[in-house]
Image (cartoon, rainbow, N blue to C red; front, side):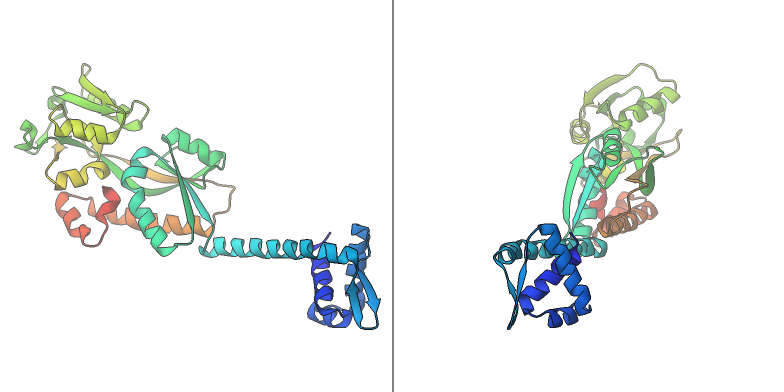
Length: 319
């Protein structure tokens, strides 16, 4: 059964006249009649009776009419939904995000996105970067926001650089100078979080690279708990700058420069399948996320610069 056949049936049923229906459908009368005939043959029932006043629906035609109307309406709604998706005036955006991204970066990106595209429905799932990759591969989400992971079926789009910084409580001995060496960090109790995250391994790699093998540690399962432990003078921690900048501004934490180690950062990327065409919502989200990421990378978000950017409502991206 073809949609055009159903549309011709509805036109004749509404107008009661083959000639006017053919004109409305931009068809010749024989072409329209052929479509109605083909529809009747497929349904196995006669749909119209020709009378002196025109075309009248049979009992079968009257029974079929509401179903035909719903079918055409449903197709029209589907077309409209696809149009909305292409133009970001509707549809949905399914995201997967690692905990650090979903907590510290995603809220402000979504604030901008939802403000610009309020009719798009957004759903978010969280997990470690490997979990996010799996969600993207299975098409459970359209975009995955995580650390960079290589996969032949996945395109990786860099959003921003996530710098890892050493933080201490304000009265710590490191704050007097504002910097220290990794050997000195190794003498402190180290606050670690989430063994399954790359941050955990990154901290160990930094200290192993400095020849430090024995550590005193407190291990937790999330960044916020790690921050609180540092604030309560239980140790020092290597944490994402995005997670601590607001606490640094408030005076609850201090960032300490590592003298004998270059700045350590890792890209936060958007992962998507190469073989899935992006929707308008996906493209719009990536554009907004990319713009905010560029602003962050230019500023490097020192506390002083962060205060300046707060007036532009950019600081929330990183806290």
